[in-house]
Image 1 (cartoon, one colour):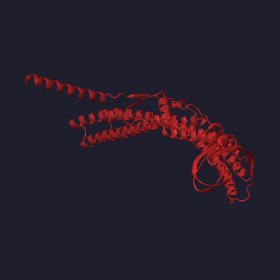
Image 2: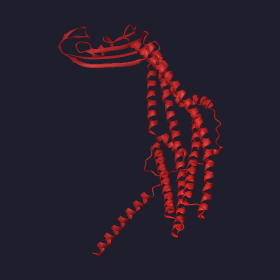
Image 3: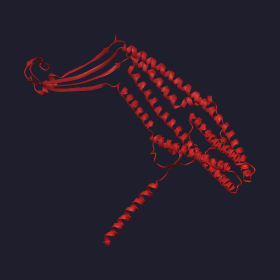
Image 4: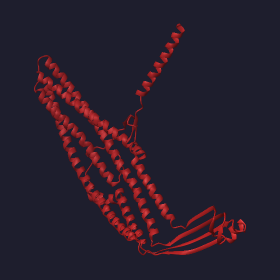
Length: 449
């Protein structure tokens, strides 16, 4: 009996140990450290938008291959074997037969287009430009996603700084609450003063919660960009951030546009589409002209009604050959060809308008980006001065509060101003960095911090 209890006790300990180990293993989930470059690389490797664009590019590549092979002769063959009954005309014997006959027939033929109004060569050129447009669309999506990753990465770092500032402000408020509590305990302050100190702590706790929520949301956004499991724990490797004070607004919108219009994927995509639809007009125009093709073929057959042997019929008596030219002249096909031609011209005009619209929008965006950087630098300088001034003012009022020269309301007002100035300064700092990265994006520079 004692031996059974001992055995059961060992099993119980084993189960408890396994459960404890599983709990510790789960709680000690490895945190993956991610640099900005790794975040960009993961996004470009896993993002489904890029994969869909690549699939479309592959389809365009197959269309180009198919149209290219249209230049070569086609080759096809047919074969049949059947048994016929009753009265019918037997092609192999050249007479009417009223009996059961076994037949075997075979045919191979080839044809090639000699002239088709230029439709074939222009179709190849059109498909080539469609392929280039789709390839540049892949680059466009990659560029846009890279900028989004950098923006999200900066947002996370920004919120980390806001969390740190909120924690520091909360620490100050708790210290002031402690002083207010002691003064209240000895009758040196009123309940209203104590309540003011408690309210300041609550406000700072709310600010900390908001910063933490914004941080978690930005982390989630980054995981989604990388197509990563939301439950995966990650930690950003914070790079050496460029000092915003060293960033100058030395850019000209005209110069940036002149450079961007040569390399920007959106412009290239629109340009290749315009070129493709230009050739589309020529493809449709070709259908208005006559077409000339050449064809040749071989045929043979066997009939059991013929007394000759199978080999004799197949290789000799029934073996036929042909070659010739086929000329097709469009006269009237219910306006289909003319309508296709007119629609192709409209599509070409629309593509030209779309290309110009992309250029106009890019010009507007670049001018806005230059202005945004200029405004961000001004805001940074202003918030920096305001932060330094409010910090000095708060420290002075805090010292006066400690010796009873100012009340808690004045101290809280000063701290609130200090809090806002610090948060505004942090936001302005990262806004300058972000705006400078937008300029780098349009210049085609590497998106690094």
